[in-house]
Length: 339
Image (cartoon, rainbow, N blue to C red):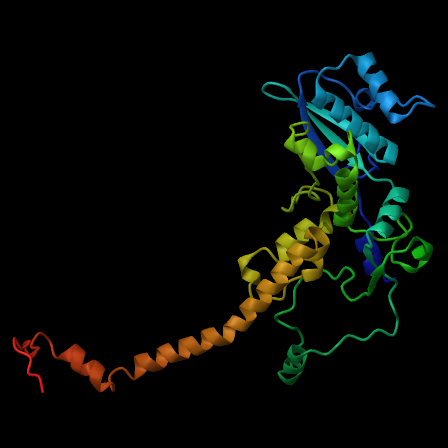
């Protein structure tokens, strides 16, 4: 692994738990009139008691009449059983207290879901890899240009590396670093948590009591989302570090999301890493569509210029434009002669 790629794979924790180590992969938001901690929301699970008996015991113990509150407790308790780490943060709102449940997926659980969801991860670099020579490279060589004016200025993270479907048994073959043997993107981590949230039940599955979407629709939670990776603007007062210099959001803003880069290639791999396959595929199609419109627009401009230059030599156009108001027209006949 090259030193540049190794540095780019280092990921300081921008959005972390209070311990400063566990990365926040997802956020759940709900409102409540009372304050509490995440440990109070997670239902205790006595040994030797099944889920239905535990629910009845918890219902009798807590004397909860609010069904949404019970669904919330069941859901968070099931997330804890699966292995997700959670931490709560509360803010005082206008009427109620707003709770933010921060979720982190541990490494072992991430590996399991990465294999189940067929995540593609970069494999180790091949030393005999040779890049392809494109048509633009040939033109640049003929014009003796040392730099491709259309190339994107975004740093190359692992664009030229091959990817493969992740398998736990082949962990040593993938690219990573000492902290994380396999490089998973942040969107892959969030997608794994999202899959858990969508498939975790909070009641009877035959009644459709499953998934975060149902809980949001029923008003149990107000929102569920993943976080951006820091600010996209560069603050000159902050200390340089891998977390702010290699922030993908900032890199996209500095090298892509500006009008002055309209003629450059898009960093599709970086867009894919940050926004996912669907968004990157949209911009890839948009770039292809716009590129193929350029020849048609050039032909249209040439036709317009040709017509404007030769307008004075067009006899029908000159007759209409120079005849002025003296237009003699034949009146309509009152009688139609039939043959």
